[in-house]
Image 1 (cartoon, helix red, strand yellow):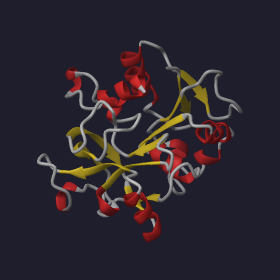
Image 2 (cartoon, rainbow, N blue to C red; image 1 turned 90 degrees about the vertical axis):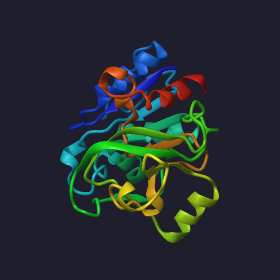
Image 3 (cartoon, one colour; image 1 turned 60 degrees about the vertical axis):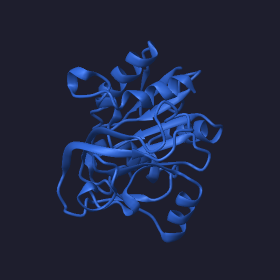
Length: 228
């Protein structure tokens, strides 16, 4: 599997994703500057990494979504290629029209940076096949604008079509209340595109692939992509 990681001005998590993918797949991903008009030939997976593209100002991800390379990313997704947007990458994916909805400021207006439990909503996609449906995993979050929202019609479609990938929960898998770190509607932590080939999520699975840094619950996501 050949992956291309898009580097925007201000991105700072491209190295974490690079290490996660190289560790799991045994192949070094390409780093692609946002101004490039094309993706490398043979790209299977595009990753929009976390960080602070363009300083995280003016509606996070809105400027990055208009980078030249994003036309190639949209074409890649349209023909069925996989796209993974993590944190700021999730915001960019929404702003670019790859996913519905938008990410707003956290309801308490504070930056959230801690370990967080998630519930896996389905395990039959190319991103989650190495998990179990309903499995509770623990990964890291680090964001100030992770409050996912969408209009009622979009939310009904996401729920009805099984396109919620992960929800925030506590260690027992219970949703709601303090288990939701940012106020996201329906406790949504990640969603799929209509054809399930684009995943956007606020947490950082790329940081939990090695027991030396606190856990390996994120590793199965990359193993799922390799096996798909």
